[in-house]
Image 1 (cartoon, rainbow, N blue to C red):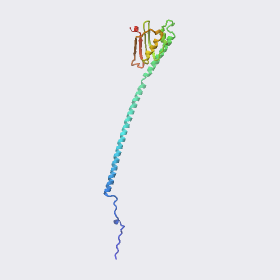
Image 2: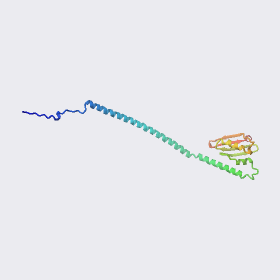
Image 3: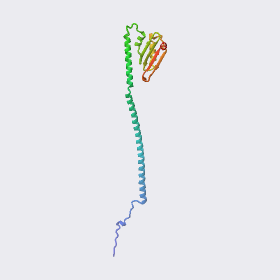
Image 4: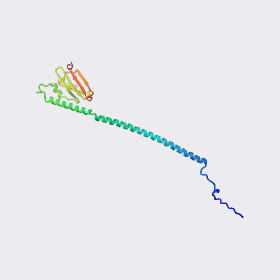
Length: 199
């Protein structure tokens, strides 16, 4: 008697399992490609956004550097220009001269002082803020004052107060001129005089 035995556990008798069908493999491949494409698009968009932001920051930096350079140049120009110091020195000299004039008149250094003009004596004692005289002409029939002031409105105030002095009452000023030069824009020059002096 012949007995035939079959080993059913051999690999050829086992059911073959295919991990993925062709359709499933294609679906997975398309899904991976889609993810890669989206990732590439997102990275590209992000890169463009970062580049645009970097460009904007670069422009802001350039503008800030340009503004800083202009401010630095302006500051150097102001430091190099000693016009303000010159004006202060000139004003200090003018004030010193005025003080010397007042002391000169007060001490009657013209002589005995008995014949000294009362009007000059009043002028020497009369003080006004930011106004000074540089030339005075006095006679019986006219008066002429030349000087300077830091502000235009100081000049009328000065002469309104001066006219209240007893020795100047009754005198009328017909000529009144004010001028500001480019060399001395910090002050205004004035001339005030009676009509007799202008003839």
